[in-house]
Length: 259
Image (cartoon, rainbow, N blue to C red; front, top):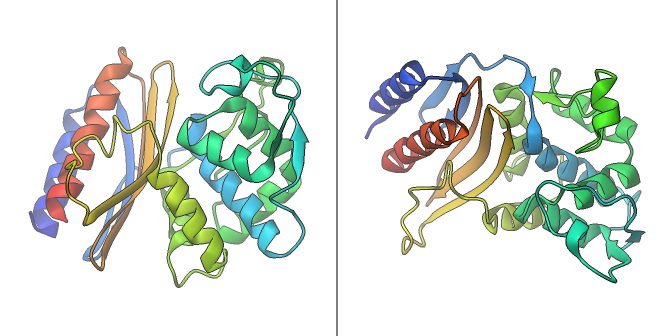
């Protein structure tokens, strides 16, 4: 599949979808953009840029990734910390790992508390992600009732993925590789990486999903040899979430065929 065929296929998939699809992709041959600036409830995809903010401040020596954090106010939803017994603390580094690979909400909230909303948002501004916002912790229904919501756009999410490029100056090479490895170890792979060939060691996919009722998102970097695609797919208004998952998986398959 060449670039023109890829763009045609992605536009067909998005047009045929029963829900709303916002997409932004950087490929070696050009950019594909479909409603990239629609501001949508972000769900868990913002856990990646929060991790980037944390790593950026660690690169500057302002944060120690080996700092132990007391586990307080565990919340439900995805993850395992809320269900562990006799576990009183976790390091910042391990919290980052846990909230990426199994999307642990309690771990994510510990990181947000430690880094702070102001520093997280300052990193977002540095990257140029003007429409993405972390205004509350995950599963914080009191804040949600007050109108506080975490939001993002597809274009912004690809701006964050671009921070993992070797040429980017926002993170150190060590932090980039650390986060890329964690994303590659992601266990929620039923969307963009769904069609990844099991035995193809040359194709590397690192992703992070997001799910809410009627909402399905995924962001990912695809690498094969010296070719790379950064893509964000944010979708909403699904009557059945599984339809959104299948749509995003089809988009991922097109990227794999292209590479």
